[in-house]
Length: 255
Ligand code: COA
Image (cartoon, rainbow, N blue to C red; front, side, top):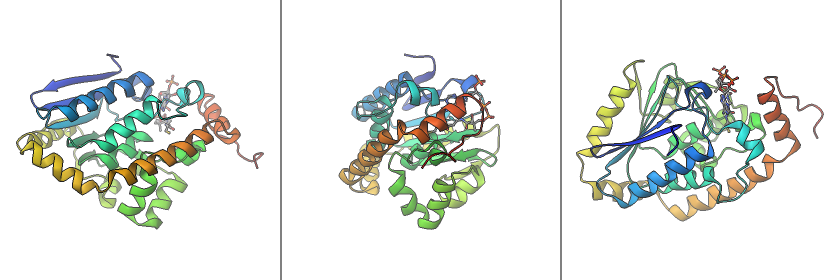
């Protein structure tokens, strides 16, 4: 297993910690693969009663490693990022996430598949896809308008600006704000509550709450198809190069 994601068992809790603090815990192919494997195993093991996602070094995650978008783009469903998205979208085991610092891209869209999200008030969340000339993924093009209504979903995804943890709770993207410094402790307390519930009933109830899986799978596949096309577009190349070169992108010459 890569040290960039630390996956451990703590009683009935499967603990998944992003661990690339110098890169704000940006997610690499190896990290996605390790997490997908762990989620698949958890689905088969009723002894895992909850999964807890969090990040090392004061941040949740800055999302997909932008360098990988250029060198190893996720262009078909075998891509580790897409496998991870499929695993989390299909998971019936309850999932808790603890958000502090930055939570960007798939870091934030994955929250729409979690069951309890704790966040610090000043956490910085973002759906940045449009700024990279990409499409919001992980079913978020359907889940966000359903959760927030079209107007607020459009604001968050088309303007693609950061929003705070406090706003995430106001919007219903997160469950509860927690004081800085207490987030890991409080997340563990919530995870412990899930471990005390009857595991089969929890999983069946979650499956029903999430609704028809086939429809969600189809939306995720369609988002991935367009995302894959966009990855090699001139506007996306310009956005990735700008990030790597630490400058603002210039879309003015593109039609
Ligand atoms: N992929 C690769 N490297 C990343 C990264 C990512 N998603 N996010 C951050 N990093 C790297 C930075 O390049 C920098 O590396 P360096 O120290 O070698 O220069 C380091 O992590 C620290 O990031 P920095 O940008 O200096 O931190 P910040 O606090 O000013 O900003 C973010 C944090 C998350 C807002 C900013 O890094 C960012 O926008 N990252 C890209 C997020 C993104 O678009 N993800 C893809 C979503 S589809």
